[in-house]
Amino acid sequence: MKQPNVLVSYMLAIFSGILLFLSMPSYVFSFLAWFGFVPLLLSLHEKTPQHQFWLINTCTVVWSIGTHIWYPAIFSYWGYLIMIAGGLFYGAFLKMGYDMQTRIKSWYGIFAIPITFSVFEWVKTIIPFTKTWWIELLAKSQWTVPENLQILSMTGFIGLSFLLLLTNVCLAEIIKNVRKDKKQLLLSSLLLLLPIGNYVYGIYIMKVNDDMLRSNPITIGATVDMINQDEEVLSLGSKESAGDGYVADTEAMKTKIFDINRDLSRNLVKDKDVDFIVWGENEFMNLTTDSELYREFIGLSKELHTHIAADTVWQTKDTMYDTAVLIGPNGEEVGRTPKIFTLWGEVEFGFTPGPRDFPTYQTEHGEVALAVCWDRHDQSIIRNYSKHGAKILLIPADDDFYGDSRFPYFAASDAVFRAVENHVAIGSGSTSGIAQVITPYGEMTASSNVNQRQAIVGDTFILEKQTFYTKYGEVFAYLFAAIFVVMLFVSERNKRKEIIKQKSNR
Image (cartoon, rainbow, N blue to C red; front, side, top):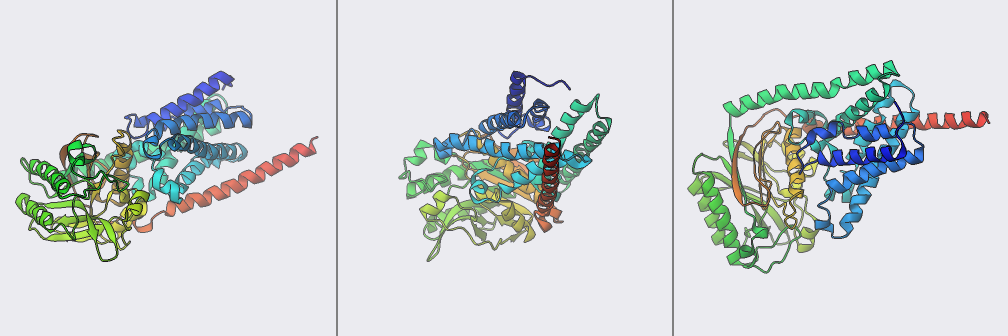
């Protein structure tokens, strides 16, 4: 392969960054992730280490800016710096993986970049700050392609990230070695059978998915109430924020929020019986003090003859929780569950994180768990609900963030991933979108628009058997981390040998 000149190499790096961010949620080009790194990897051919460093970071900063363009809506001007910092983080471990691949002369060196990338991408999901706000993953590029997601039920997202990077590396190696190294060409070609096999298996699973939808459907409706952008609603309160939305702090505001969701819910059941309805995370009433509104809420469930899950405030003697509550069609409270993953603003406002006891509630349609918004972002929370027997997750969510139209897609992808990882059905309402109905195999049978008041309805089903991921958690992440350590050791050993050899030849 001919070495690209400096200008062309930077153009290739920038092109890779553009392909990668266009593959992410909020765009519609998920297929680009399977070859988005290839131009960058080709641009690195026969470059100096310093040149490779700048090319890699050029690519990853472009990718990070395009992906995290919603950060300034949350972090103000700091958001721009965080976007660049995120790109440099990706650049650091991509450069590490590329150096490891170059130094490891054995056949398994081709795994250095995929292993390094997937391990460090997983690491950022367990570090406190990045765990909370850095919700973008390369694997999420596939969130609307359920055929590619089935590996999640075995490995979690790290397995899909690995396949994406492996495909990119193999394609680059094929291009570089088409007339050069026949063994490397053969190995790269054979390894492409892994993502192909994963997709073929996904096609089979989605046929099972379709059969289940026809034979055992459960119908879920969800609302998008747009209360955080409705000036009529906001004018009825003080416009105080709890970090994730405005506080319903007057009777008039609480009643208006209830009325909006009541009307949306009534529209849902006009043409079809609905088993569950889920509202957004609007904290429209206090379970302790708003007894009259609570009675109206119960009356609505009885009127519509369905389960309704909504987000509320639950105050006990010493604590205040952001709490999802579920009312049954007979008007009885099925259960209430506090939000576990509270954000900084919520804690400052006075909300306490819920206990990690992961309760589930029996209904005629199966075992149900309640979660709230950011709970779906933490892999361990939904996995533990599933371990405790949940087959259906009902999740009120607030993805408004000042009307930003890009963020809700990333949050919605979390729900899809949690559904496939644990084979649970998910229904999620929202304040601004995206409301979703998701099957245990990751198909969204209904989804709302963003920043549009509406109600959606879709079918899903339940699966009884727990997944490998539900039972054993991040075992593949630990395995990949162990492999990374071994490969790093081999790489550093080979580096020292090369240094010693160079010194002896002087």
